[in-house]
Length: 113
Image 1 (cartoon, rainbow, N blue to C red):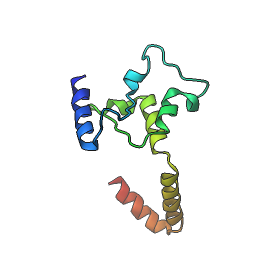
Image 2 (image 1 turned 120 degrees about the horizontal axis):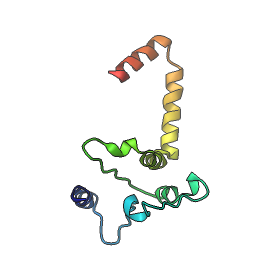
Image 3 (image 1 turned 90 degrees about the vertical axis):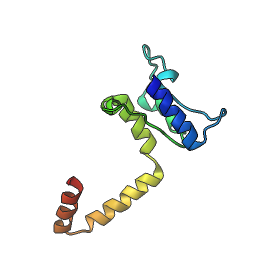
Image 4 (image 1 turned 135 degrees about the horizontal axis):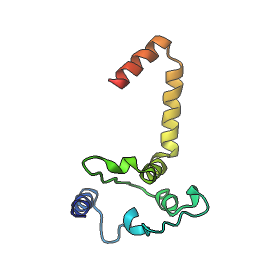
């Protein structure tokens, strides 16, 4: 909990959060022993809250264990699935599909290094 408080203080200072800033803290916002999911994932409180976020912070422990949890990855996918990002990846895909096989192999090799 101390790490969380320390990270939150840093976030508050670096982002200029005020007493009126709204912050979704999943652990505190949901009953961890009886999570209400709604009728589908897209009707869950997680999705409802995160689709309107302007900024997102993911606090990680030294082993990044949050990324091993399905819910954290679901929440992260909501936050990064934006029209702007989809358009960006469509453009990347278009450019990539126009490249020769040799160029694609070079790019894959660089990406995996």
